Length: 479
Image 1 (cartoon, helix red, strand yellow):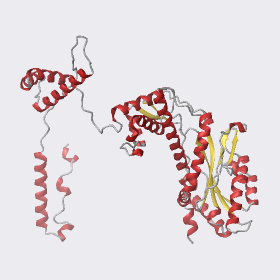
Image 2 (cartoon, rainbow, N blue to C red):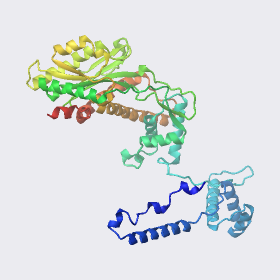
Image 3 (spheres, rainbow, N blue to C red):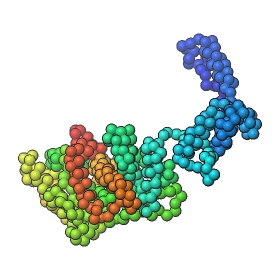
Image 4 (tube, rainbow, N blue to C red):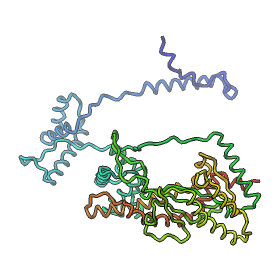
């Protein structure tokens, strides 16, 4: 069987002298150009020479040759070791090895690194590191790696947030002006953190995960959902300030996750401080006009003693349940303490009737689908449109533009705080894992939530972008 069947000739990829190109160029010209192309291509292939054989000597062998050259000269060393190692040793290579040998010899003498007999011996020459230079330099990079391994060894969760915080603390301890925030060249990013994980052999591990349920007939569900919103707004002439969407989102008191970095191949992944007791539920609500309502914050506990010792804004709804999840009771509490006061105030500001309709959009969480909740909203002249099941990631405004940014804001707050704690421990030579007990984190988390709400109110476009991404804005502005 001929091997030619597996290869395509170059001529098959050239213009046909009698093809469409012949309408623009004479056939003879096309043929001459094809012949010249083939001749040039063949000459180019034949002119490429193979690289000669190359024997790579080890650092130990290089040190041996360099030592001999220092004692007897380059030419003698080349002649002697070319014959011994059966390879040609170039003078330029030997000069490089010789310089390395002398530098290493001087370094050992300065460090008083003597052998038992009092001599200074260079066993091997250091090899040049390949790839990009380390962002932090070898010394700081080694310190970060040692610290991360120590934290992981004690069961602490390791992720990009924690690593960046630790690295910032270590760099700041050495010279804070190296960080970009202080005008320096070092900017620690998630990409850098992932590179560090790769270099120390850590991989992402998680106990379990579940498959996402994808809805069928998505476009049909979306069209019906947007039609319901459009009908409610146009029939009742509801202003943008009274079109609301609220959503429940779980927030970690310690902004980490069930993920951590662990050595590749580890069969058991233990991690401290990752149970449900370290979570709270936050209800974020925003309007089509970009206004953010006060938050509802639900802690886990059975008595008010579970609440943090912190003074929240008076218009917030800070409460608790046994498992920190919302339910019908907490939904009614949220409507009474947050939603209704806002709606009533906006009706007055817009000079509307006290029974002018409002609209709230929320998902199919069972705690807010009860007859009691619907009755309370209807009594206060508030329509309800529900997000179709399994479509919240594509049709709920808060999910599309706010929740992720809110969690990232809190994660950054934690990162800055954690970095400061690491810096303090390094200064005090304290090897214990940073204290993230509830008594420490609850007041801190409360203050970060207040900062988050102020941040959201200053960035109203986040809410507006959420409504736009869900298709609500365009649906209401088109006739």
